[in-house]
Amino acid sequence: MSGHSKFANIKHKKEKNDAAKGKIFTIIGREIAVAVKEGGPDPANNFKLAQVISKAKANNMPNDTIDRGIKKAAGDAGNVNYEYVTYEGYGPNGIAIIVDALTDNKNRTAANVRSAFTKGQGNVGTPGCVSFMFDKKGQIIIDKDEYEADADELMMQALDAGAEDFSEEEDSYEVITEPDAFEEVRKALEEAGIPMLSAEVTMIPQNYVELSDETAIKNLQRTLDLLDADDDVQAVYHNWDE
Image (cartoon, rainbow, N blue to C red):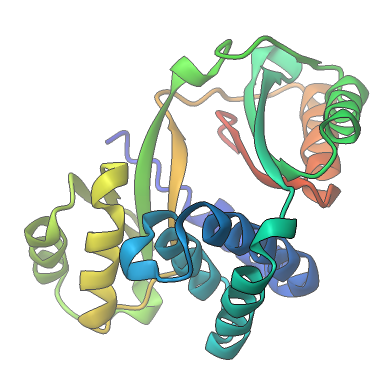
């Protein structure tokens, strides 16, 4: 691993999420609906649903809210018309950006995403234009302030559960898995009582790009803020070394 756990960025995003839980819960609710429609309401037999539940718990969604969402989705499965769509493009100075969206209107979402890129002096590219710069991995972040046990013990627990890599940063630990092993590793750590700041399958940049130009930073931040405010946008990945 490069040593980039992006702990501060994840913590910042989590704090932003805490200030806008309504939107986050709505987004996760959509993901639950799609997962249930595609694979049924039992997370033991529906890997995608199990992943969404993990995301919901990482965002402090109450268990009864998750259960209600699953039951509602099971009853309304025939009426769910959301679909996943991914956009790729470039921000200022060639910063690579991937946008995952879940929408019931692809034309609206495409227009909003294109506008966000344009307003930040970037542009949407063709599928695959930047995704090769990222690796799809399961990523679990443990805040050192929340975990008091021995780092070597944590590492062995993670590796024994099937993790691919483990790294220690200044203020956090990072566990990396292959996407297919993520849920098993996450569950093992949860059952061991290990608190997780973040647990998700994500896109990790192979290399990070620094920006020093204030105008470029301002433009990129504008794009990211506009995407973050869009209800259809589920996740944004980039290789900016903030």
